[in-house]
Amino acid sequence: MSCLVLPFGLINILVINASASPLDGITCEEALTKLITCNPYFLGFGQLPSPICCKGVQNVSQQANTTTIHKSLCECFEIAAKEFQIIPERLKQLPQLCKVEVPVPLDPTVDCNT
Image 1 (cartoon, one colour):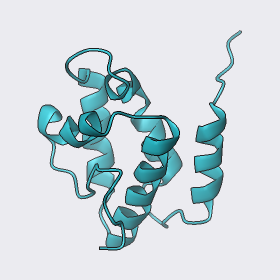
Image 2 (cartoon, helix red, strand yellow):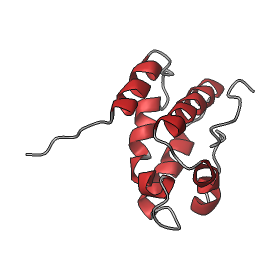
Image 3 (cartoon, helix red, strand yellow):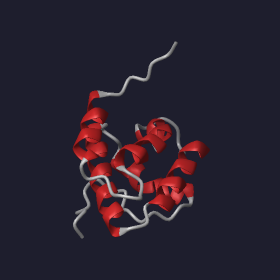
Image 4 (cartoon, helix red, strand yellow):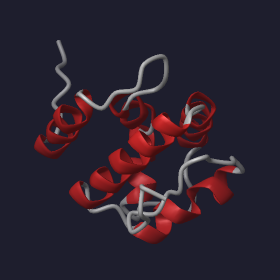
């Protein structure tokens, strides 16, 4: 019997963003779950993201289809990048390496209000 243990920081992110979840679109929790396979790449292991990671990026990108969702995900990714100590350059390079256009800047220093 196995049990999924969420890091304390992820629990905080999910709680913070629960009330900001957009209707009829991908939520912060769903996006982070889809991108969990990118963690090794984000933390500096390996030169490239895995194909499964890139599939998750593509899936999140396709579901981020409104301005409200864009802003919510931008804020979500900003918090997650800081909380999980993701290497910022790795996050920024992800769309190019996965060959996926993303509607949300993957940059923890970007202003999500613009």
